[in-house]
Image (cartoon, rainbow, N blue to C red; front, side, top):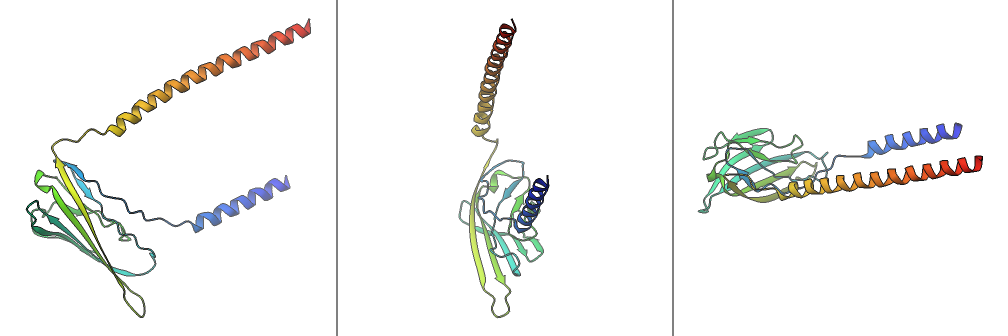
Length: 197
């Protein structure tokens, strides 16, 4: 009993230590590229910082390039100040980033067909060290296609089919196991009765 208690305490201590050592992770994922008219669309821009404890001034600029190649500055985020700039997106953009400024995404509200095109996210960080201030710059492009209706998601169809196939297989397997166990129990009961006589 004493050994089990000691093992339990060691396991609990290890888990507490392990949980304290865990840190959140930033994962750079690509943005969705298809939107449907009338819905909202999140343009994902992630810029992971290697060391979160270092202070940094962050400037984010979003640009839109039309099919004709014209570039329009549509959104600006500097430190904690959001600026929805004049242009075709005025009043239809909203900040959707994180507080730690690793996710620097925006949302287009009420998407229209004219919103198709190339979007560019520019991130500039100026890190604050005592003796020097290095800068980091990244540019990400997102090509957005706007459709009138959502396209079929074949993944959902395949996963539903696989779910039903698996359900039928497991039900059949359970039935076979039940018959096998019933026969085995019935056979052992017959043998016990034979030895009793």
